[in-house]
Length: 136
Image (cartoon, rainbow, N blue to C red; front, side, top):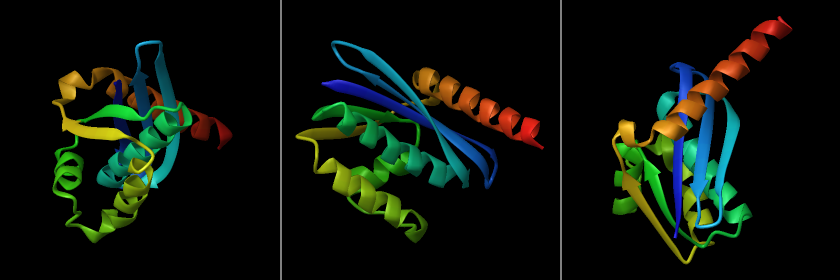
């Protein structure tokens, strides 16, 4: 079973956002960063989850335990519903991606257990902001 960790970082709320995905299988450890554009912090977490599943699907992963430090995402996925309509499109994308997996579990972890993804997300955001500043 693959372990997938994801996290998003946002500068401002809303503001420039980035995410990082860490996928751990028996054979390898993968890391991806992605520029999410301008999002609020909750939308960035949802977008990061979508990106995490897309990465896992691309690598042929069919059984996964996904770790998130977003209680909102864990609750929504385990209850099978999203209360805030702002996140419904992300939820629908995730449900479509979920059908590509034989088993997919979503588990909340405290932020200190999601350090690697958090660290990479913050670094990715820093690089995006610095690159944008140089272009000005």
